[in-house]
Image (cartoon, rainbow, N blue to C red; front, side, top):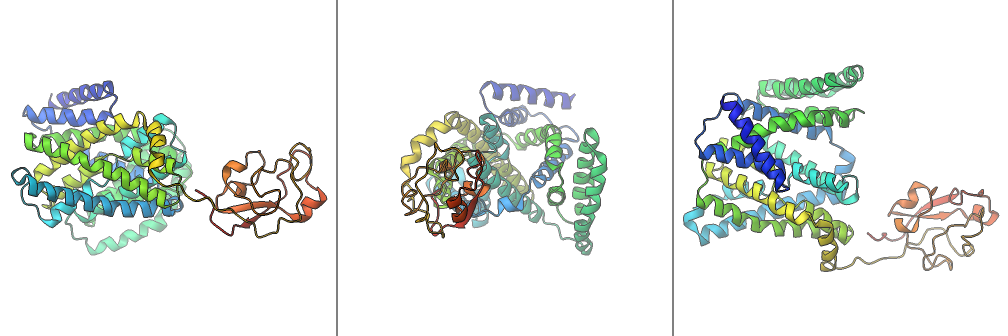
Length: 466
């Protein structure tokens, strides 16, 4: 009976949130707080269901792990610097509130301030991905940057969750390194499984049995094991399909986690006001993202689009706060404050991102424009004739009409200059200039309809504009 009440409350909360055009998890949090306020007892098994949802969440994150993407400077450096800046701002803001309203905040240790700041430094994977999907921007430049930042943040949260468990690993934990060669066997088994429900069952078994179970057995936090197993399977061709097939099941289990948050106690007026006050940190976080990405030579509009979509607190902040409270690093009331702040940040971010593209365009003048250096190929241009786009079949047809190209003084190489189909892939990179091989150019060897078929990619002498 109690479980049915919780399910009904979750459905009602989710429907109300959807009616307000907010993520459903805001409704789940609200439902949990409502049940906690009414004094409803937690049903048996809810905690285990919630933990299983977190395990599958970490496993799904591991399946998306792409080392090459995450090692791009605009992703790993932005994530690292933003985490430091946001944590410092969160610490300073809570410390300031403790001075202004000591009765509401109380005296907090440096470690408590750091943990609160760290919990508030994350952006919501669930919320951001939903916004990007609604805009069909997941594969766009700012979408890829935002997802890369989220994956690194989730990995940082998983490492914290593993380290904060307070467990001392047994000597047998060293044997976990054997999972690396064992991944080859898992890949071969996966090849024979195919698609459908058997593949989903295989993923749950690996995440819960090998990931969570083995790691817990040797004294290592199970959520780290789930992440590791996801990383080991990430290179399989069906990794993305498995992640999608687990999504609904994982999200259903995570409903239990968000419902459980509200059962930690009844929020008082002080907790609600503190949560509202924490929203003042969000504009600073958006500014940090925008400035850091701009400093990484991203275009100003791209920087603001990514910053606005990342301008919210995260469900992982709640998880970090819960684990911190269980480890005795954080008072229980802060779990409630952070949970309320996360829910409120979703509402605020949803309102902002309804017009996010328009806002980003208007905010472009707030940052200085990057200089646009010319890009001179290492091969001399002086022997090349003026392009004649209308002359079909000549090697120079379709040459971009940019200043200096016809005179041989240099040519800015940027993707917008190369619009005809058939250009080599290097012509669309901001790090290279593409020029026709001089002998081919002079002899007109390129056949009709493939004017870009004979090109030499040369390193630029200066950095291309971004």
